Length: 155
Figure: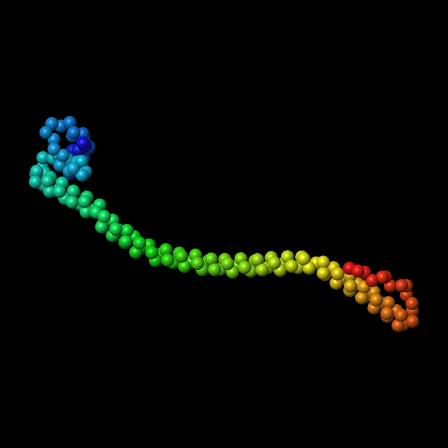
């Protein structure tokens, strides 16, 4: 066993650990902490009282109901903050889902525009053919006979 041996130096008391298991006739005064106080100015009854008090405090501090109380206290203190974090995360998730939907919709629109480029080329070819036919009709109406219009394209 290890013991505590206080040494007084003026007003301050220094406590040193010493091995008291080999001391003849030594009786451990605090079975929980394994410490014994050796000092001539502390009466034997005072040592016993402090040992019993230390043991009682140790037992009370480690009792399961105290641990459950401390756990409940911790939950009561931290629960409002956790609830606020949960609400913030849910709001951010909703905003993110809205943004994701908008981006996906925009990507779909761009893909559809790229896919419709074939149709735009077809319309462009038909417009060129219509302009050519109009120019030919205008020239015919004025009495001029311009060269033959190009054949219609199948684009």
